[in-house]
Image 1 (cartoon, one colour):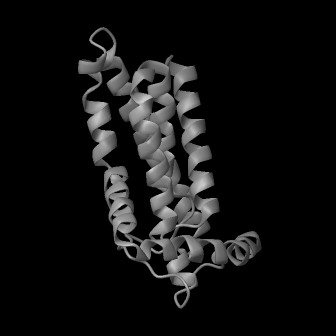
Image 2: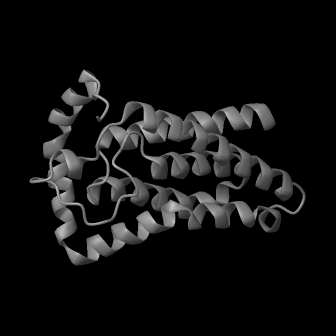
Length: 180
């Protein structure tokens, strides 16, 4: 038996489905779909693992410390994210509105809230802003594309993406506060 979705999410689903459907319909344009798929794949882990790994090269004096900070922050964020996701059990838009929203990318699970891709994108942007702000012209557009890809591919609601962004922001700020 599937857990019951909280009423607040039922209302959000009804408010968001039409906007999500319109946005997901943009994925019918092949160049845009290819862009969203690429952003989604990069945001899954490759971009962030690369960013963590190159910290010693980017900042010879403090890069190893930043590498550890980014890695530990990401691991803690993943643990909290999974706890939230498995407790709230909000189904993905393409599952809830299967006749209206097509999913053009495979999902690992049924649940959408919050967006882990967006959480990491925002978290790493905030950490990078504090340590290597010159990388932001590359990371900010990538992060925006990653967030858009989650809705455009039919995997998340807009509120999932906003919640993921807020969680990522909070983890980055906490990490910067605790570690510096």
